[in-house]
Image 1 (cartoon, rainbow, N blue to C red):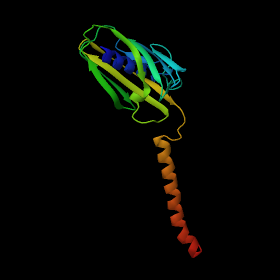
Image 2 (cartoon, rainbow, N blue to C red):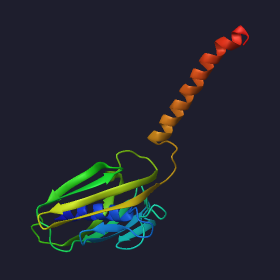
Image 3 (tube, one colour):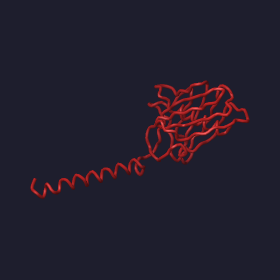
Image 4 (tube, one colour):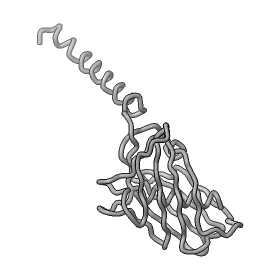
Length: 182
């Protein structure tokens, strides 16, 4: 059940957090969820709920890569033998499932944001996911903004290397021309 709730809730929370709608996060299937994020020092960063506010492209759910997300979620009925997944930009980053032997229709908990990010990269991301069981399913999506500076991230280092290589290539091409006089 905990994995169901954790996965489903986190999926729903992250999905709720990043709905593509202009003014509200979206969940389908009769599920509800909410999430509050904190930075690595425990300071509150953002919140979102579905149905409700937050998680839109213009008002994304703000998270810290070193922080946490407190979540809670419920389904319209009890889901047994379910499976769940969380996708970032269409790529599954976490998945799981549970028998839910305790017959719970909801769950809550705290998750580390870093468990759902394959790399440390600040920016705005479309997050989606869902939970499926024989009793039904729920899915959702949301926009999530990973706070922080891009300096030192994989993308920043790759950009720096590409710039240095580009300048070296330009100089390598220009030097013979300058030596010949034009």
